Length: 251
Image (cartoon, rainbow, N blue to C red; front, side, top):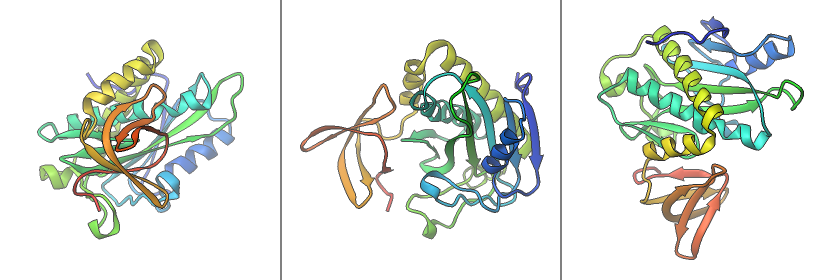
């Protein structure tokens, strides 16, 4: 049964600049965690490396805010935990579609990018631990123009013919997030890694990884214990901590 997580706040906006920025403002005002900020439209949403994340009316933009025990490096691994929550959400909303994960934090639906995840620290490590914002965008109804992206974008409506209800999608996402956060806390990242690899796109196959102006070619061999991508190339195996992955068919 899908239920809203206990003792977890929620504010939903028709329009907002950024759910992550609103979360930052709420934490600065002393709002107790955990809580979620969700919006039906963002005007200044962003993804990794400051990229703009388009959020049209009908899509879901949401930020969950949680207190995390552990170092910033350990907290960063929650991007994979959040990815599993997104995967479960997509499976619930589009049960006939193929759901896969693309390193480091994208979700694919029938091979098209349908979701992105952005983690940001909202407070320094202290007695209450790190306060972390996990921003998630899911294309329920709309997706960007393919000419504006390096990856094929898609939406749930494009793949299934029908956009899911906003409120239900948010409920499933929050419930799934709580489930995977509990798994992470009880069993550690090794269990998260195992489940993530089971959904990883192109594992064992050839991919490209762009590092700034440099592009590496190789076989996606593994996800390391610290979340790094393990790429096997002509000159040997390399661990990659940050970069953009391109799959066959990406530009």
